[in-house]
Length: 248
Image (tube, rainbow, N blue to C red; front, side):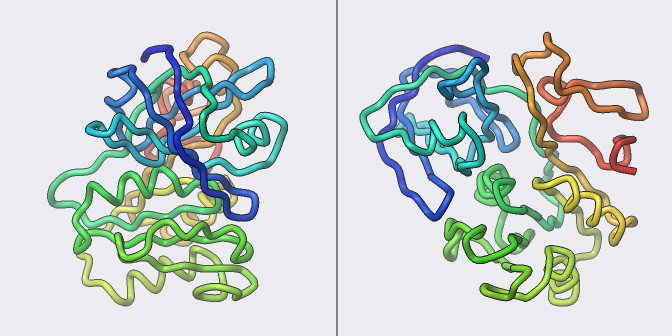
């Protein structure tokens, strides 16, 4: 984990979302895995933890997806190309994957960035993405044909009318996965619903928590597990769903 600068090269917006493409000269920033996050300068007292959406070492590029939901994220959303911000990272652990696994990647709203990053590292034949939102404004068109993707919206404006639960059922019907594993990131209600509906499928989730420091000192992001309290910033953010007491 290092501290350094990020230079905003490009920005694309989609309703309340902004895809921010940064360049950096900090080599350690580019040693990043899906699930890792950075603490980004946000014009507030505390930096904001934002998951990495993509990384390209050759171009020294890091990409983040930000949803405008508060003062800090609004600052990031309003950045313009040419501006520079401070950053600390990469922090946290990553999703467990191996060469034989069959994966269902489930993201809700602003929880999709680490799953986009992850999908680029798994063969198409071994995974499907389920991307859910309330309306089409929550579905940022980032995947294209890069990954098999099922979209769900609660009002039916885009994709299947329903929730990610309906999307996961569709994946199970269509694919011949023998031992699927769910990897998720999104609102806690969504994660709980997945656990309730698919209790027998192994499930790892990336938790979203407020945190002050991002390196394990402030204890502001602790979560209760079967082994006591753990810090989301350094022990997570990715946990086996069965070890989380708060989500039982």
